[in-house]
Amino acid sequence: MRLTLPSGPAHLTYCTNVHRGESWAETFDALQRHLPAVKGKVSPAAPMGVGLRLSAIAAEELCAEAELDALRGFLDREGLYVFTVNGFPYGRFHGGRIKERVYAPDWREPERLSYTDRLAALLAALLPAEPGMTGSVSTVPGAFSAAASCPGAREAIAEALIRHAARLAALEDSTGRRIVLALEPEPMCLLETTAEAVGFFETHLFSAAAAARFAALSGRAPAEAEGLLRRHLALCLDVCHAAVEFEAPAESLALLRGAGVAVAKLQLSSALAVARMDPAAAESLRRFDDGVYLHQVVERGPGGLARFLDLPDALAAWADDGAGAGGDREWRVHCHVPVFHDALGRFGTTQPVLLDMLARQRADGISAHLEVETYTWDVLPPELRAGGLDAAIAREIAWVRDRLAA
Image 1 (cartoon, rainbow, N blue to C red):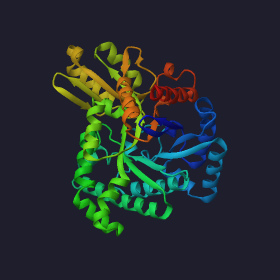
Image 2 (image 1 turned 180 degrees about the vertical axis):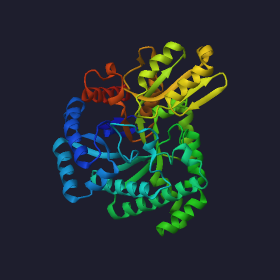
Image 3 (image 1 turned 90 degrees about the vertical axis):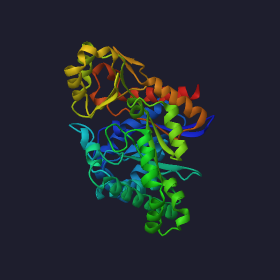
Image 4 (image 1 turned 30 degrees about the horizontal axis):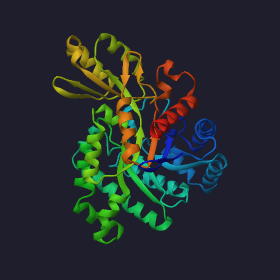
């Protein structure tokens, strides 16, 4: 939906990666079942934006003109518009073990570039023809940490991203539609923290060498190359991920603004927060070990921050050396929980970080694209799914809208 904030206009939606569907037929069926129901609850009289998730298979199938026309017709009839696409998960995203597979193929591999090129072209074809309307595509943070440590990985990732930026510039020339790629930092990846993301942008994407490479690929004048890289490459700031890393919004945003890295999409999400680890907390956390998604853990203890790839790893380490001194260990767990919860039984959530970020969005304008993302709905404990999915999505959107309007 379109919002008018003190900081300027913005678009608010939710990410449809919460719905199952890998083929375009499955995806379209889910959109037709859920989007009108959610819109009827939160925006019955005004158009509602869509955060579209397309797998590689669905994106390829949607390129057929008949399928694209059918989607446009549905959007027009229902008062919906697409302004952002989630291009993070390439393949299957529900119904089985996903974990580190969600990052594959990464930006070292040609399949990731081809997939993202296709998503950008589809978004350009779907984006409303309105002055100043920009589309965003969020993507993996370069690569999973193990892959990112391979020799030459950073250089290969940067090369692919610069190639994609050149294609986005050409796409804007041919269609008049500006599409921005937004890299999404996440724990245990090449881009994990805001500081790491800024360092990568400055060294590999906005440097003189990157500008020269972009100019060579695009045929543009070297003098305009850096500006075009900054125009088409940006960040997707997921509030859950930043909170898991114990980042303060003021510090993260100051880093980004100081480096001139734009936030093309602000993903509105909350994580689990454990203020004090003890045996009862450890036992309760096992209910969130769903076996499907990675639940990275960052622990803040006497020695600083310690990071664990997944919740079972963190629990095992705590059992080995932390159970006797758990009171001085605070955990943040990468498990997206509905944003309207400030507590979940014995646990808290990182909702205070989200409230801080929303206040800054209202006052200062972090991004024009706002997207609620709680894709873990299917695997949350049953009591958190009471009332049904559509009602929960609508409640999340309304909660965010009301805080922005406060």
